[in-house]
Length: 121
Image 1: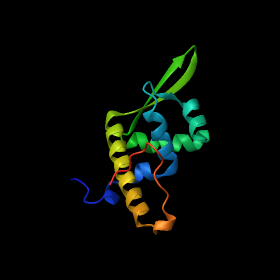
Image 2: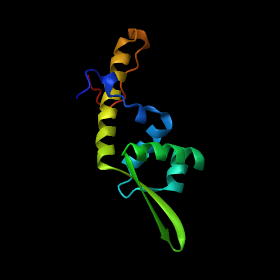
Image 3: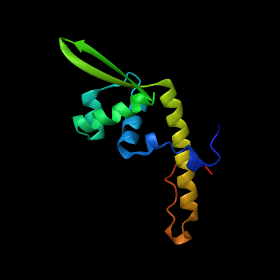
């Protein structure tokens, strides 16, 4: 069932700031990211990253590969195809919500969109 408003499409799984950072980092990583790279990019502790990855994996948004590289364990995280599709829908909805909020601000409080950026109406 399609959400009736952009607010309905704001999936809580992605709306948490750390998971938003994780998903954003993974979108730009076609070959996935190692656990340590993802931890550094998102500024998280091992435990915090593990907890968020578990939630995202349980939801089918990411997949995790564990293997040995040069006799050392290595965990690589990938965005799943379903996760990418859901995250794209989330980003569109978030942009619509933010545009609506910005348009509701008093004229003197509005900031123009950055040059070259398209604002969805």
